[in-house]
Length: 410
Image (spheres, rainbow, N blue to C red):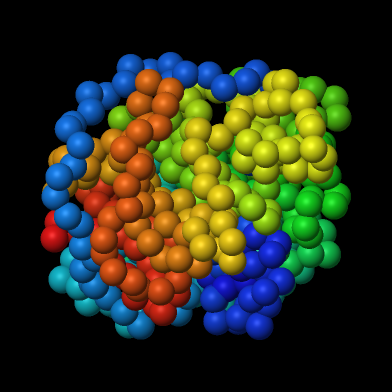
């Protein structure tokens, strides 16, 4: 991603060209061992006919400071919005924004480069245990994942309850932090980490199984004793010398945003490219040890040489070229597979954008292939660092200008 006011991963070329915009538009996500691609193992949900209606963006709130995520606990009508400087705000069902933040960690957060408070994930049992998890860069620019609990006031978190789950040292570069947390259908916490920054992964972190950078991590956080997480026994490298057991998949550049499809269990990983290509990797949640190819490949293109071996790599299901002058975009902003009730014809379509272009596009992934690629005419709302999804499955776009838009029927 270009250095924007959201931590969005950018390409190297865009990063260089937009360095002056780092403070105002940072966060888009600068800009993909084991077995190759595998089909989704769960039954494919039935797919509705191709949508024939139009979509629009309805502004539901504004005035946020670099919003990077909208999310909610299961069954909750509130919408929680993560702001990069370190706050979590509550957007109430009536559209008002609570004056008191749900959480304010601005004093603990580093926003240097692409850093900041990047994500929040509510535990599946949040209604009972009040636990949620945050992903941020600390004052030393390390990646930090902490557990936090809600206070006796349901609209205010207990700041004093913070407990460190894991610290991931980051090199001297201030980009490619990754940044998303999400609970998978198996109840484990997944975290997407960037490769550590610098053009071309100079430290070779993404292919190094002794490094937690450039990876998809899978953690069991239902552990009451320090270090507050355990490595699931069926993680592909658990217990192997010289390999980190937390790793579920590797070979990623900067997986700024990813999402599970609740209907199929498939995992969609939008990995920000280097200079030429943006990609979406789609795999079954049962596929472990997938190597998504970075920095051997950029998408389906050899990165470091004219020829390269693709043996053992899981190549992207979807990709697009930047084009001359970034005509097609510079840094993918991954969204969600739509499974809400308001737009049933949109079911199963993956929605995404690009930080630089701000479009809304979608495609359908079924039976191992992509179809129905479509750009929706929703007008221009500027830079798009992130999407959001509420508890009802409705999807939102968050703008670099601090506005929140719900995707609705036109």
